[in-house]
Length: 315
Ligand code: A2P
Figure (cartoon, helix red, strand yellow):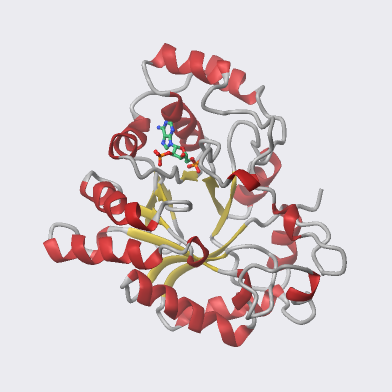
């Protein structure tokens, strides 16, 4: 398994299990299957609404004794309604309680957007805090404090553009160690990848398979399928691999972590087996040609008239 290395010597398995959209009734088994079949990296978030069920899997697996807490890497994310500096550590502690852990390996600011504390899912611009009310640097400083307290080993961000990273870096000595963003052949993010590698920031690719199980309200009628793309299908056939494995392998070959979500036993195992072949130059050239700047998860829904967030992606 390819690994991402951190400055303190910690290593992260490139392939992790995603849990966004994993149903409460299925995610406990999915995480148990993953851990018992060699996954060492689980990606979570408070807003996925299933951390208690993920935590039940951790508790059960650790109780069996074969896998220990320190053998695995758990990431979680701070939701947008807990950005105020005094709200960060309580939100983190809630996540730790749900996951039944006493520390996280990695904690991320989920979006560069702040909601009012009582607005989990804002209905209008009034439900947001402004950048003056909740400066991102203050949220970041609270994550630094969480690290000092030993509640998390590493800290980072998610859904940050190059500009937003630059701004944060200019205000702190503690550079984020990770930026988790949507990343796949239709959204290759080459510029961001280059910027992050120059600054020693790792990337994690979310929605690597096109997130086909998003709620209908989040889908465009004519959105392109990654798994059914003819180039991906052709390359899969050539390597005797599945389309999912090609997409996961491609992310790994670019040096990023990648977190395919599945609650299906066969696909959980299949996804972990994505490293068993090498994409050649022809494959990489063809996949490079698929980039079309298409997002499955469009954070522009946070851009409301009258709030502070007019340009999430700075583009
Ligand atoms: P399931 O959970 O039933 O396996 P993403 O990680 O981009 O959000 O995509 C998740 C979606 O892709 C889910 O619908 C998941 O369904 C499906 N999926 C996961 N692994 C594979 C695979 N190897 N091949 C096809 N679909 C997959």
